[in-house]
Structures are given as structure tokens and as C-alpha cells.
Length: 289
Image (cartoon, rainbow, N blue to C red):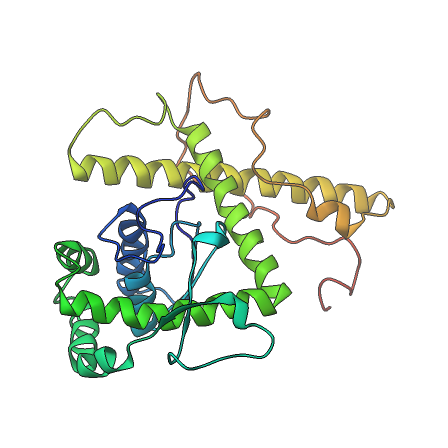
């Protein structure tokens, strides 16, 4: 799962050695967490991808308690701090990565019951994660629960940064998924009638516009993918080889064949035949008989 991709400029939500309050990056990720907790489908994601701004320390702590692996795209490394497990811990080869600050395990242990109680309240829908972080962001330097979430987030994010550095496959996965989601949102923005601005302040109206826009985007993507499938199958049926690597470069976010304006006819009658979604390029290779 991924958040809408913002710009990569530094924001107040990125930890730079000081306590950060509730910011837009917190809000975006917590809305995702809120949505995932209410997800009743068979698909239950356990990983959240976000852009660079999704690195707020309290959100790392909250995501870990909720059972989600928060994996944002990471830039601006000079602004990030690797926290030591204890003040005296030293490493032979990677010590230069770490700053002078250490994790306050005593603070986390002291408020561990409060953290678990808060996490359970969110999971049981008795408390909104968005409301929680908004409240914790007020006077965050004095809020002990906020500091406990932040301290837990320091440990979780440091581990995530080390995983990012040591695992090339993980870096590639994060980049690919983030880019893919950016492409989807750019495509959805292109389909948005009247531009990106929503001329009402009604939250229900906002939600309706966003849902309808993404529904339209998914319908267009499905139709384009079906056309690509038909074309590839036709080429293969004529005896021409289809390179799977070439096929993998074809994006369903094609715009030049789409007519955004004009007469739209909504036909709810089911098609006479089922659409072709099976890609048969090489018999008994992609699909078992």
C-alpha cells in the first residue's frame, strides 16, 4: 500500500534531530493506517509504502504497533539520524552512520502499557489514529505519550534504514512501488474533470470526488490492459514471437487513445461474452494446461 506521492522537499515532519509535531506527512500515513484497519476484504496488506515525507518517528512507532511494515522512499539522508541502542554502543564498520543520540528504552518501557492500550483502542475503532496524532502533536515536547511513540519510532526507523542500506532488493522494491503509485495518481489527476481543485469544502463531497475519480481511473486502466492483452494475443496467434521483457515495459497509463471530453454513454448491460483477460503468448509456459 502507498500514499499519494508528494514532492520530495524536506518537511517539518522529517526528523532532523528535534521533536516534530503533527504534520501533513503524519496525516497522510495515519489515514492509510486508518483505512487498512477498516479493510474487510480478503486482501490484508501488511506493508505501507510512502514518499520521503512518510518518515515521521511517531508514525513509525504507531505502524509497528499496528503490525504494519512502514517502508517509505528515502532521500535526504543527511537529515536522518541513526540512533544507537545505548550511548556506549560502537560498531566496527558502520559506526560513522550513527549519531551521538541513543534510544531511551526506559521511557518506552515506562509507557509500554499505555502504548499497547492506545494501539488496541485504535484497532477496536474506539480511537482514531488521525485524532490521536493530532492530539499528540500539540505541545509534543511535553507530551509523554508522544515522546514514547517517538522513542519507539527511533528504534523502528533505525532498523528500517539499516535494512534499506543492506538489501538491494528492498531498495528496488520500494522505488518500483512508489514510482508505480505516482504514475497511477498522475494518471488519475489527468482524468480529473475541471482540474485538481475541488470547489467545495464539504468533506463528504471531497470523498465522493476522490472515489469517483479513482474508480474512473481503474476502469480506464482495466480497459487499456484488456486492449493490450488482445493485441498481444493476436500477435502471438499470428505466429510472431512476443518478448516478455518488451511486454513488461508497456504501461496501462496510456492517455493519447482516451477521449476525456465529449458524449459519454453509460451502458450497464453486461457484455454478451466475457472479456479476454488471459495472456496466451506461449502455450504451457505462462499457464499450465
